[in-house]
Each structure stands twice: as structure tokens, then as C-alpha cells.
Length: 145
Ligand code: ZN
Image 1: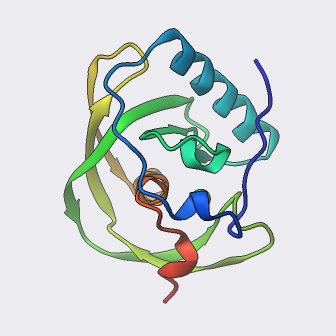
Image 2: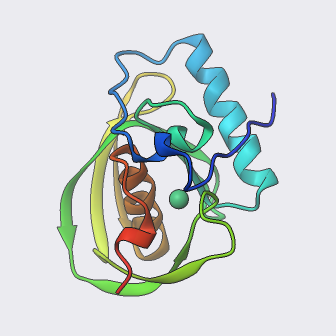
């Protein structure tokens, strides 16, 4: 495993729309492991591939309930609204209130190319929405309330 440099908001790669992944290869599995290590090292609860300069639709998450990766995630259902404070490893030193859906259903594939469906609420729902935004070039500072 290896630590990857996390790019910050001045880097315009963070504003690009990332490409769907056709298949999780060995190389991408290694990327996922490295992303998780990088996230833990930086004390984060989520990390999206564009934050390490890779414009592919891959995110990793661990809100304290164990790590997982999600590839080509899409939000297929949103319910409720909740305003809470967010920060971002690519926006160091800043935080602010963002309105998100309170509950989401997210579908994608896992690191073994198996379809997954996650019903999330609260912090996990917020984290997933934040990371999926990264795949579309959106940062939380665009959404401050
Ligand atoms: Zn972020």
C-alpha cells in the first residue's frame, strides 16, 4: 500500500467530471487500498478518486463502521433534508453547513465487480452524497447554506 497525495481546491482536476469505470481491475483494487490508507492517514471518513488526481468514479468510505468502496455510485432515492457541518480533505481548514438529503439509496458495484445497494441515513448518507459530488466536480463549499 502507499499513501497518495491529496489534491486541494486550487487544483482544477477537482472540477472535472470523472469517468465511469467499466471493470474493477487489479490496478484499481490497489488504488482502492491506497485510497483507504490515505483516508485513514488524513483522518477522513470518505475519499473520492479525483481527490488523489484519478478521474474515475470510485469512492471509499468508513464512518467508523468499517471500510467499503463503491464504484460508479448513483443516488437512486433521496428523502428528507438535514443541515449539518461538513469539511473536506481537499479543502483543509474550512468547514460549513450544507443541506443534504437525510436518507439516500445508493447503487453501484463493489471492488469485486458485484452490484451493491446501500440504504443510508444520517452521517453515512451525508458522506456518500459528499463523495459522489466529487465525481461530478462539486465541492461542499459550492453548497454552503
Ligand atoms: Zn470532500
